[in-house]
Image (cartoon, rainbow, N blue to C red; front, side, top):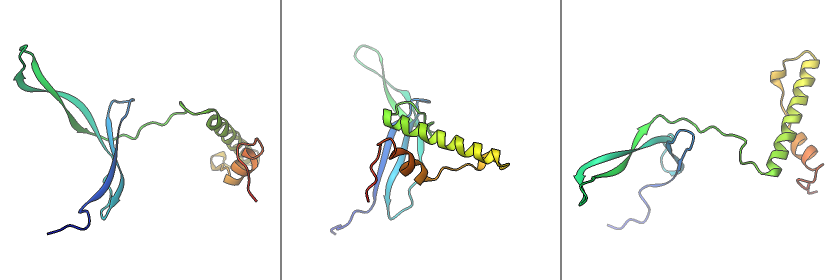
Length: 132
């Protein structure tokens, strides 16, 4: 019997999440099946029940399944241009909230149009170039 196609094709991304020490495993690509939900594991040291030549316990590590909690995304690590674009976005959002509030509407309904942010603001400070 010769297999001409793989039986299962998938890609997974694993990363250690510093905030809680968990190891996260996410399916980034799945062919012919629905990707599984993200998974989380804690790394634990276990005793193998044996000793080495120095009479010290031989240990290993195992991954123990735990509840998956999405990592918190912070503004740390943003580059200069990213910080500048986020500052502009926050400014536009606050303007929209104020406009709604001044007109007697709920400020929680504030939205920033992508065109206002990208085309209007970012081209004005030469962060992007608008092609005709």
